[in-house]
Image (cartoon, rainbow, N blue to C red; front, top):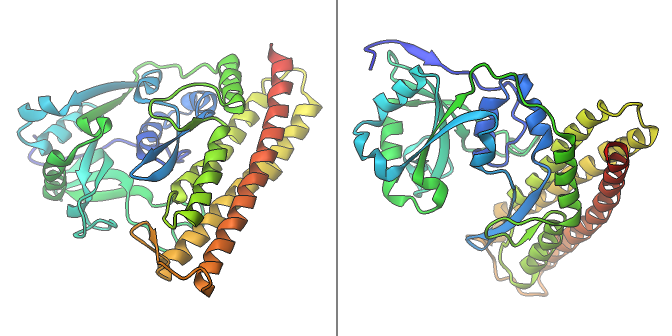
Length: 369
């Protein structure tokens, strides 16, 4: 390890995916090179849902193996890290070799986190630089958000930060015995491919993914639904919030729906440039998608976020359970009304999304098949 010095590897200026770290981090690395943007436009079309700790989640179907198309990836299982006696020089050496590193850390030991000094919670973090003079690692991950963090995108707390060597080493080391999920079992080294000319967009691959979303076809391990059917289960999750009196879904699911619609719009705009001669029908449908689907998905997210925020501030929800108000109480009636309105919004969005997205697919299939 150098006695003094610093190095910093740059991330992309824009974060296209901010719902989950396992997508946000590799895309932050890969999309520093604009030539990889076509890979983004070809992917993140299909979504699936799953239940974790009684909460309904929605995620994209992309896995680590897909990122190998645009990044060099080395996965180190934790049973091999016994040879890494000190994580600090390991991280510095990796950065010196132009490799980003993702590790899981226990946020109990980190500042500016919801879990700071409160509870033990594992979170993935990317290390992209260091300064041996100040003994700081430059990192990127999900920090604690404030009331204003959701005003723009919903996940603006995905950001860069500096963490002291000693603090990060402790957060990594103390978290080691808490790893449970398959992703937790690895340190991942991410490198940009040398002499890459970028990704060549495959419009037929894009259409296949879009068709799978519309028809709800495909398979993901432990899925509860895939494709458009995810919206049906999202609606049912809100329904069970009313009748089971517990929180069965949180804002991440709604944000992923909003983010998914924005990503699909970017992809559709990219595809529109490939249509020769231009299609007036497609341009009209694209305008409909931009003016109807994206704003309604954003409104859906904010509608739930407003309910969730109010429920927590007023104590309606404590540890995923609703305060046991009497059914005739004003508080309980207010909860039920908000959630019933949310169900109607999901139903309306579901119908509109299916109509507009299907029409877009048929027009593209006509042009490219």
